[in-house]
Image (cartoon, rainbow, N blue to C red):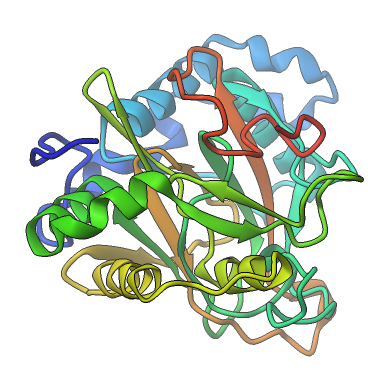
Length: 319
């Protein structure tokens, strides 16, 4: 357990965050050849040198920089959704291995309002709703999102530094740190394999080799997970969760932005937590908010203890 203040580029606040450091432009890596790449049906273009260099830069920002990168320069007006997806998946595959995000084995899922229920329904996953999502990590090391359409109202993205949150907990309520390193029980949302429990314990923080890693899943999954296991949260657990939420939601600690059509964002789940404001669906289904999400583990990844980030290697490789 880390009992000293974290330092470095991963630890930032809304005032110290440098947007230029995490903003990438496609034109800085491609001159004109990327137009031809998007128009070709040849999927082997992921071996292109510029895609390789872009993947290396994104990985460096995620692993050694501020923890997330935003790529701009693609146009949904000039290219089809299929072409954008092909480029996005080629780039993601150069960053690392794509892993499954549900029991069906899907390695790409659409983030949209599928009208399938809300988080109050115990087996509904957050990416299928239009609800606001509290600050959380995803299971893989890196989450990628490609924006096809965003909502006219809501759907803003919020990001916070996990290292800074750890520092604030250490400064304000050091006594809670052991709880975060021990972790909480989370609801599997009906994705568990047959015979496995409906909830699982996951550490929020892990520290090794001078690297702090974080996995904090949606707080909406904690109480249902306990309920399914016929357990009740302790006062200390509730207080710790409330503290974590308060620190993440403090405007002094997070930055926000709104993805534009064609934007791609990559979040490092070891270094950041992300959130989403609720959004309003459009009467025109064809222009409803639509993102495509991938979960990626870089080819050279950190070493974690057994059981850390349960679904890190996908839902078809459950621990």
